[in-house]
Image 1 (tube, helix red, strand yellow):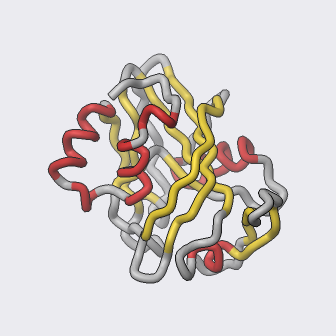
Image 2: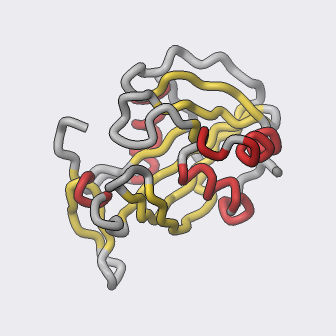
Image 3: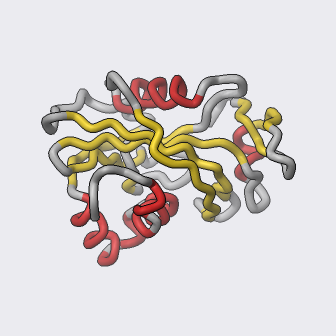
Length: 179
């Protein structure tokens, strides 16, 4: 994370204000906006393994992609942007499915404290994805949500903390795939 990125923080009244991304993740975390995208096809979810060099949670499996909107950036626009940046593809329509909050420690000194807008896209068929951006994603795979839950029980440390929360709170995400 070399460049300073300004994202929307959320104050105690619910008003948005600009905050530097890394500052939002320090000291227990500041509540801020985030986006999580889930791409499904034939009952399978496209998941990614974060690149080992990421500033937190490197090498861990996570949902299709996550990001923060830039200050003043539309949430849906940010979700489409991040699909292109990380995975090298975009989808036609992302449907917003839920908004919920969580907090999780993601490294020794960094926290996620996020109000997450969850987006979903469902393709008719499993498709081959282009090679992901190596600095962001080391690999992808299509798996059923039930298989993720089973593997997560066996190897929880292989998964990003927020993704474990998503699986535990699956019904709150309002996604169409069932676990």
